[in-house]
Length: 528
Image (cartoon, rainbow, N blue to C red):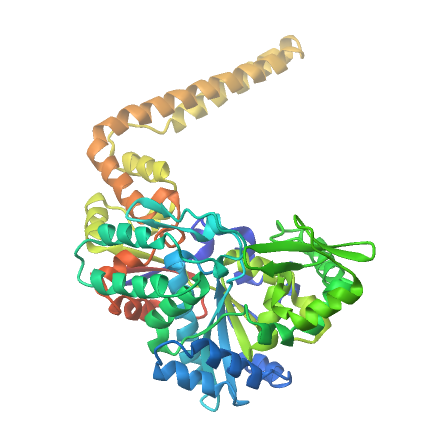
């Protein structure tokens, strides 16, 4: 069963996302295509006019996949990328260990579903779903843990630099903990086997993530792109060189940021140079000081000549930050649409003018689907309590208070008393004015104190009444905590594994069925 609630009514999305979906006039100039009624024909046309390096892309992908078990759908999609009538739909995410958050699955499956939908609309074209792996991210604190069955499992390693390049040492113990947590669920053993194969039989995290994602989603034809590749980076050298020597992006994006920041909190501020220097164990910012370029927190320095030599010899050592990453993706893929979360949407809105400067097509930017997965037991509890799933999006104590007010026989809301106080003090204020005008301020102060006293009494009445509904309010809190762990959206906290352990690949199929590739509605799916 599916229910829907507008994103703006969930209370879990910021104003930028809500305005983006509503195409508010103040945000509309910062992106090209409507996020709810996109003109895919125009996006296809724009992409056709761009010289995508298809042969180099396919060669890099074939090399990347050569040690993996071939999956017919993936092999065919990679080969199809050579054809001018093939386009991609892309989502991006870092290589969080064991995929990280539940929404990782949603992003990928939404990408798959949008490709199928586009094929129906435009049968003369072929559409390939792509997961672009942000393997050069160095935020280990974010990428190195998962939340499973109410417990955070963290990977403790002293490695530094890009997480994708880190060796998966120490993950065997974490896989053991996952095995205990999943118990004897029907598909737990096969899932553990996939994790062991991915993380214990590969040299680094990006190879492990590629293996795992390929095993889980290959049947849908998903192509994984690992951009930490010298041949792919070489395709981006003109932009990298321009960034190092002319620092164009800072001026362009900063101008956009100034306009956008009038209305919204800015997601990412551009730096003078939006590149990192990347080696094993190292990912540090590049800065220019006079006639030299330095890698922060190291002794590495370059002159203009030696920097040019380094670019030609090792393009893979130059890693774009969030300002330049998206354009790299769009330069090497024949991409027409990008699916991202709220934070990703926020920084993509900063980039349209930068894309225009380099004459790279700006894609359709879509908000990823958000889902709440509920179970039959929770639905039964809610039915007994007389509360709806959509009510659960409110703060817990608001749900409890509303429940008590609906079911009590006592008058907990002191509306009449408030009105009586206001009426009394209106009369007192008139009398004070007739006696001495300076007494009016004192009367107003006493009015405020009296209203506060009534408010305190109202709160005490409600608190006392809640004790009569202890069982019901405990049930409400239990359901809320189960479906919104730690007060967060389920998808931003939980991992996919408990569901997969129970249902196996059928879990992905039911999620795929529930998804709506282009929407402004939050999806609630109940498994009966």
